[in-house]
Image 1 (cartoon, rainbow, N blue to C red):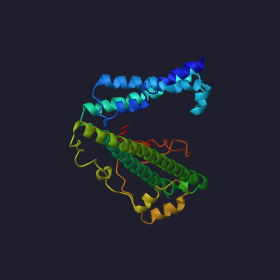
Image 2 (image 1 turned 60 degrees about the vertical axis):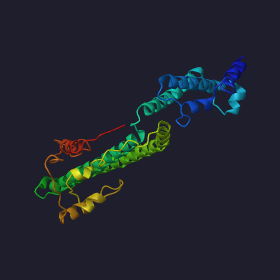
Image 3 (image 1 turned 60 degrees about the horizontal axis):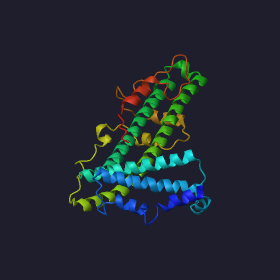
Image 4 (image 1 turned 120 degrees about the vertical axis):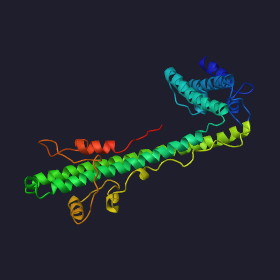
Length: 303
């Protein structure tokens, strides 16, 4: 009996009845579909839902399941499949309706703005990471290798722990920068995919509604975060922000002592102070440095 019911259900999604091809036409600007009308979009979604139900429930028919190479699932799972698919189509249909109703709307421009914001955030994050590294290197010079702090420099174990804490902090922020870069790259990849998809749709919309001049982008483009910050890092410091890897901190300190200068402004990092009674602290346990790192840039996470 279940085989007969699923066969009948699937047959209703085939010609001469409305099919998935009819649904594609109902949501197409090329076919001059009146997507600005809510009733039309609702009818298209109902067609999609009925055909999608037929598709998913066909897995309960052994012959259809084999033909379509579908995995077996429970009734509960199939209902979840249907609900998820409908949600995706509903979101897409709503966007098409907005495009049809608002001829100045451009999802392409929205995605381009998201890319600009993602790149700005990446630049700010990288720069703030360098501020943090600068603060750690200042601490290495003024504390771990400060000859006046005899209780440190005259105690190899204490000095080694001091240097190790700086090393761990810099390793940690470099690793954060590495993964933040991967996250930014993935975001931009998805945004570019959206641009390619909606660029074609918007061109079809413009042709269907006779829109000759697409909405202009805002003049001037985004503000480059680098223009808001005073350059203050040597090329050597920039090279330090490469992928995480082994670093010789004694060599770094000797190079610094021979002339590497840091312009360290109040409010960005501040003086680094160790936790009372402890030399072994990692990233996040240095309040002064972390406060400067967190406050030195504002992130705009536009999703």
